[in-house]
Image 1 (cartoon, rainbow, N blue to C red):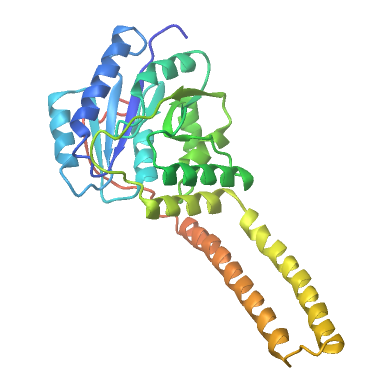
Image 2 (spheres, rainbow, N blue to C red; image 1 turned 60 degrees about the vertical axis):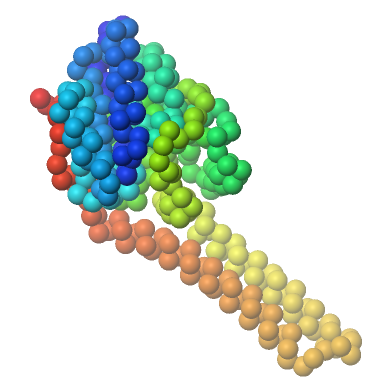
Length: 321
């Protein structure tokens, strides 16, 4: 694989007017360097996906597309979420390989060159993995550590310290189309493809401008979706909790029997009624909650609603053109 490849770079955006211009400038420089080095062809492109932004993001993208044919833009009909916006870009991208990167410029786009070299070396998927999380708060580092360890503990495949900064070959992208989940968690889906993969380490930078689009509420929603989409361990935990409940119930029964017949400290009816009721009540609520999450996912999948809808495009070329 010594010839230059056609590369597409997909950038999902949501209310990113503060960073769009700088992001476009850095990506333009990156692509120009790769073209000059002979790594990628002049047909390579950068595709921005506007995920229903409420600010001037789409207006700025339209202006970029008018000035420079390197850039393409897709506007979704509303806010579908980061994962759906990213998937829309991956589906629309043409070329031999596609790199996905966030618009906030925290990912080091300088390693795209190394990703391309790994692809030329025979890898279908190249993950961008953070060396460490110095720029994150203590809270963010702690919750991320818990999340990745919990996912691995529950049997869901994830790459530690990898977000959505990755290169995928055309073969891997075609395979991704066969995954029809409505509740998307691409960090878990991509490892399931199974083609040759590797990692490239990089230092994550501070956000250039704007604010994070993954506050605690969104992170919690993504975590729940990831766990319920890729692991049935929580369902099995209900059975284990029920068995544990029987054991505790038996222990409480023995203790109540002992206090009642061998001591004078027994209050008639209080212990034997209250403790089992509290334990069983909490166990029932937990079981119903877990089952409810899985039923909600099944409900979404059965409806099979579109994962995204495109409202309009700019400078977009398909692989057939």
